[in-house]
Length: 156
Image 1 (cartoon, rainbow, N blue to C red):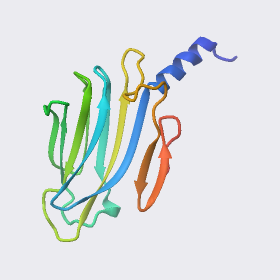
Image 2: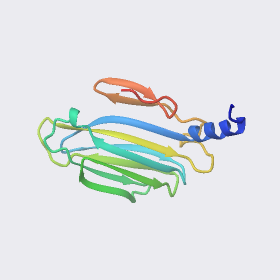
Image 3: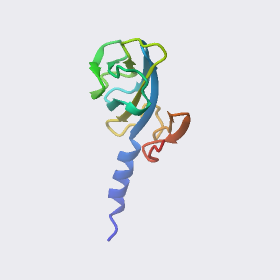
Image 4: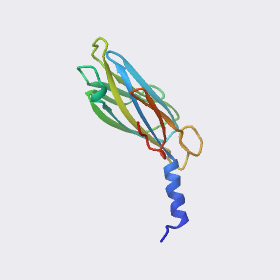
């Protein structure tokens, strides 16, 4: 028996209100890379990150992570780990930034970081971009780029 159309409509609405972004990037040792996401108030973000051991050339794979809100307030800080996750609800509209540092300088080495970041709008609103469906995301890994979204899974 097929599910009623109202149930399918609710499922599609929930899927379209969630954007998942996946990204693998290199952080040169002794420096940082930051990701910024424009969020609306009450949007819920959840991210997990890990150092990709196979593509990391640095001997010290530990990273520092700091997430800040639009006014620079700290939402999450982690020091000296190879993986972790954070979750927060945006208190106000604006740019929320996650920075990943490779604190120990080793000449010519990089730490590769894999980040999965999902944002869900609360109250039926759209993703931060304001459209009815989440934007596609370019994912780079080992010289290849794949386009994915919450509907099209990433396969890099």
